[in-house]
Image (cartoon, rainbow, N blue to C red):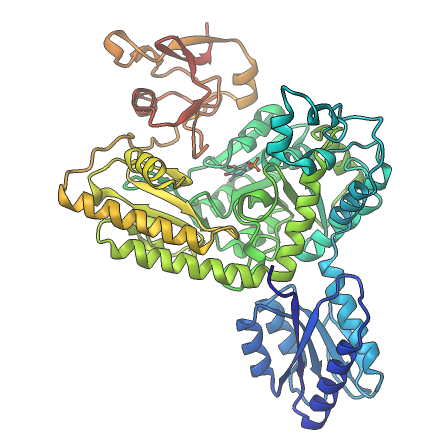
Length: 634
Ligand SMILES: Cc1ncc(COP(=O)(O)O)c(C=O)c1O
């Protein structure tokens, strides 16, 4: 484990004050008895606002900045710039009677107060506050208090498995703490996810502070559930919603469940690489203009492939038209913690944001968060909506992992993400250097119609063009897995994607680059033409029935295949009753109520024959045949 150290900057143009305070702060930290969440401190001098900004932009250990407002001109501006760089930093303004400032979210201290040990305590307490993990600590303390369990779960802290000749190996493999942290709502000191008042609420409050929300809710069934909860909350009894057709299937499920009337925005398509892109800004504005009765706009930012919108003007436009905005940030929980990734959706004014904390950060699978910033938020109703989708037996380790993931981002998010970006840049350079594989740039990936829309690309998501290798993406994926022990995130017909996360270590970088280098040499030796293994993505077709009516109404099954495995042309023109979703990436080619066109039917047929390791959710497979459930118009 590396040393735990916090840097604190003292920004003053007065040599005398700066030196005096630095010396006194250092003395306080040397004489500090062990305080909760304490660490070693290093106090750093800055003579000007510029120096302070430089430090904040480069020093990942910086946690707090003390600004002398009397000698530093434009302290307010410095506060704004520091917050824009590093939202998590604790800022202290040393003021006197004549100081002028209007900054919020800063601590004030009297510049003429010589009690530096009080200032030290303030700094220490602010840092300790962020480093606190109220739920994870209570869970740990409870486990170490070794109570006897006479409650669920039945394995009782692992006791049911530990000594069994048949299943003790599972206990051993998983480790004791996976079992003894698996507790239940009977343990009252651990609070209740369904009605939090103590440590879960405190953990959620800390998450709201860290992610910049009005309120944050922990979700233990992924963003798949989080999206449904919000749509139920806003449109539970139906209503109109403008939504990107290429959104995650959970949003489409919510449309079906709650009888929502969707206005679909057509996702842009980059056929060359098999990506869905964002929706052109003008199309979003047009949909808002012509659907003034819509109550919600839903967009995904960033997408699976890393595209993120210039959200601020879009959200403002929706708000001007009386719509709430939900942004699915399943892939963007890290967005707030590095200036190169900001602004994220909350910072652009979104009312509701869902994040799969588990996708990019250090939480367990299924651990997600809902962030709320809706000025009209009805907390009681929201709690009821959330509880309808929440198990009464949530996984406590998952809740603890949300608490810890939040702490990590607040304490070292900037440092870790800076490292991730460096890893991503080195991967790019190394992969490009093979001369065979090439990491796609934004301009390669973005459909032309979006060129002026301010779309950006999350550097942690690398899409690699493999077309020059002569291999199919599936072959390359298998070779990487079987010969090099590398599992990638996903493939299209000619790309392969890898995700750089906080867990991407140097050794993994080394192995991945080595694998690409070796495969490239081999591929170069016998160049072949790419064999396209997945057909091009089809465009969205017309809707004839509301998704809910199509899904729950009278339906029948129609075979996709005709004799000789060709297409049964009888499906063309039928109306789908199901959501048909190739997975990954989980973007539907058919939504209930949508017409099955020739190109959609052929796409599904080709996909079914090539399969390519992909699941096709919604396709009914029986023996050697595949069927589509369609609306029975008879
Ligand atoms: C855009 C998007 N939203 C939501 C989800 C669902 O997230 P979770 O896996 O946390 O349920 C996914 C999953 O891949 C996704 O890609």
